[in-house]
Length: 156
Image (tube, rainbow, N blue to C red; front, side, top):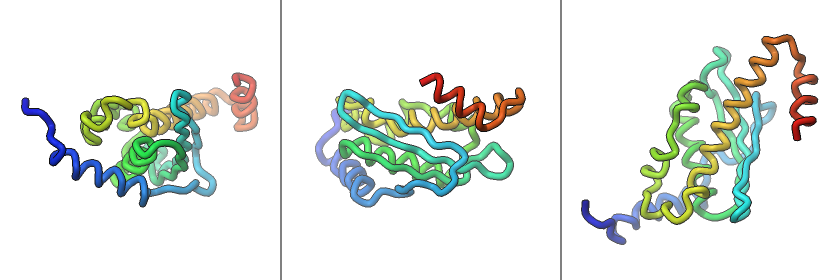
């Protein structure tokens, strides 16, 4: 395998900078079905993801996010939001998304020193669908939304 040259990296760097300066799907959604925040304490990156689910209860209809932190984490949040909004994956498909694929998309040569920054947004999207799934299970078990929120608050 040949080494990655600066010429190979330049288009990806420009793409990342474009996502950082002109983020796609940035902004909180009104009345999301689920909202989850996550962060990278090592460098101060924070991403909050809102998801709205389609009426079938399985596909992501809309995603919005807010992010602060380094260029890489903000660009990656925009890239993840753009992909989810474009593809409308099912909850299961989100659960099956691989961090490795995101690193390949961004470029391992760019993300290799900060993989946590590059994958933070995907981790938060995955956490959001896990929360959605857990809430569904609790509702099916007879818990009210207020009881579920109370349990979540008590858990910390």
